[in-house]
Image 1 (cartoon, rainbow, N blue to C red):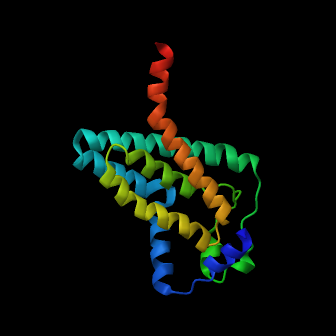
Image 2: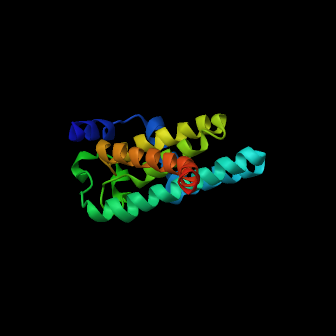
Length: 173
């Protein structure tokens, strides 16, 4: 199923979809999109924006650490074969392990950590986060299971960042 879905998504030939996904991926590269979103939240959101931005960046950092510092070091999964990807995006793939998607982990971690403090900002961030996840498969950088694992890592990271302070306070009592 992973192989079939990868081939199907990579074969999308609609130029407007391809351009949109490429633009979102380029913006999200090196977490630029999420740093930018956090800066806007700090500038425009007052206390709520600062709280959301800090939670989002903390979750993003944890997700990146788990994804790139642990998963990619432990699981040496090759990326989808270049022959499956009928467009030039395949040439820009990183050489690291395919498992798990760090882009997706960062996007979901940031979005899920922001949403409880500022639901409308979380909803806005959910759109590019979903596009990043789709782009990672469409570009041939990841299998859908890599993206699902990255999403799970991102969601757990957001949950931990939001819950850990309360858990620590309870333990100290």
